[in-house]
Length: 282
Image (cartoon, rainbow, N blue to C red; front, side, top):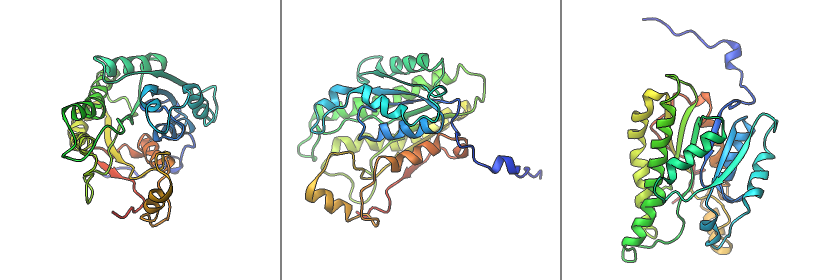
């Protein structure tokens, strides 16, 4: 049986900019306190050009409020090792609208020179949920539209775009986000949200198989409890105490994993739901 050659010493050395020349779309990057912003900063720091999607009305309606898109972009651009080589672009989008996901993907590709290598579907609907006896059809439909349907349609549009490239074009990556709904205890207070995030986790292997012939990997990341400025005081401290490190996860914790999944080092990893929880004890 033929033996594969060992990597050369040069191949073993890490490129400080492993995403140089690659392009990425990160959805749900409306706030500097959020995971989307942290992911975009990591991708840019690794050399990628990034298109940031935002839907300011969602965050503006939340207790934490919304950032100005220009401030988010400036923070991401600040992470670029060479602003002349890595572009940071942005645009709005309501992904529940008919044609919204495909339109966003097309706009991002056009802005990034005709190609999107990495899709990070980070957006989600926060709030508007409850336990089993409180949810209703409207809640279920809204979470379905944002948390699941729009993600699947984004992946569909991404796959169609990648199919236009030469066969086996490297660098194709899809990363979706889940929320620990399959871990011990589940999420009994957020049934609508848990259902839709569970659907994404369940679909990960199917999507990975579907996109394999396009040389695209598909993985889903569960970031665990992350401090995105939505909890304070006693509840915050009680959650922090359940981490062995005595602190919450910070946005850059899952961002490091997601950025690595986008590199060539992770090309052999696909179809997985990966927990990045820092040992959180439920």
